[in-house]
Amino acid sequence: MQNHILTIPQLGLERCQTILRLAEKLRHSKAIPRLSATVAVAFFEPSTRTRFSFELAAHRLGCQVVSFSASGSSLEKGESFADTLRTLEAMGADAIVLRHFASGAAYAAAGVLTRATLINAGDGMAEHPTQALLDARTLLDVFGSLDGKRIAIIGDCLHSRVFRSDYALFQMLGAQIGICAPPLLMPRLLQDAAVERFPDVNAALTWADAVVVLRLQRERMAAGLVPSLADYRRRYAVTLERLERSSAYVLHPGPVNPGVELDAAAVEHPRSLIVRQVANGVLIRTALLIEILAQDFVQPILCD
Image (cartoon, rainbow, N blue to C red; front, side, top):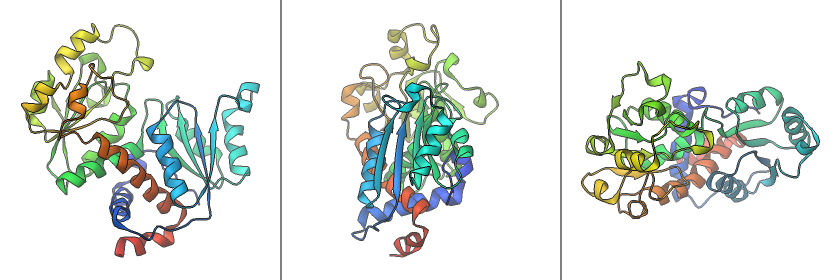
C-alpha cells in the first residue's frame, strides 16, 4: 500500500490536485464509500482539530480507529519510537496518522513501516501537509483558483510547519506569496526566494487577497526573538480595525492566541475563513484516506 503522505513536495502537484478535487466532490456527495480498513491515530503532541478531524474522517468511511497517545503507553517503559510503529503495523493498521514533536519524524517513521501508509499530521517544525491542503481548499472555495492570487503569511514563520507546507502548496498552485514576520522569525529558506516582504501587517493586508495568520510558537522559541508581546502586537497583529481597512480574507490554522496575533473580533469577521477551514479539515482528510486506502473509488467520485 504505502503511498506515504510526508511533505507537500513529496506529494507533488498532481496528487495534491486530486485530493483537493476529491474533497470538493465529497462536500456534495451522498454516496460515501465504506472501507474495510484500520486507521491508527498516533499523536505525540497535543491536538484538537487535526486529531479529531482525522478520527471523524476515518469513522465516516467506516474504518476501525485506534487512538494512541504516548502517555500511558510502553514508551514510558522505554520502548522505542520505531518499535511502537512496528507494533501498530503488526496489529493491522493500514494507515498510521502521526503527529510528533520532532522535525523529520514522519520520514523516520515511513522508513520503519513495511506495509502501512504513514500520514504526516505535523512533525516538529518540518511540515503539516494536510493543513496546507485544507487551507488551499478553503481559498479555492472563495477564489476558484489560486493562480495569480496574493497570499500573505503573517507571524512566526520560522517555527511553523504550517508555513513550510502552505508556502510550498500555494506556490505550486500559482499564487504570489508575501511574508510579514519579525526579522528573527523569518526562515532561512526565504533568504533568496522571490517573495514579497512586508515590514508590518498594514502593508501585508493592503497587498494581499488573503492572509494566513500564524501564532507565536513560544513552546519552540528561544527567548528574545521578539522584544515583547506588546511590541509584536503593535506591528504584526491582525486587529479588527486593520482588517476592516483591507479587503483580505483571513485564515488561521489554530489555536488562536486572542489579542496576540489575531483579535477575537477579527476571528468573527465576515471575511474570516477560520470556521470553514475546520469544516474543510474533515473533507480533506476524508479525501486523503480514500486516495490512500481505496484508489478504486477515486475516479468514480471525481466523475460523479
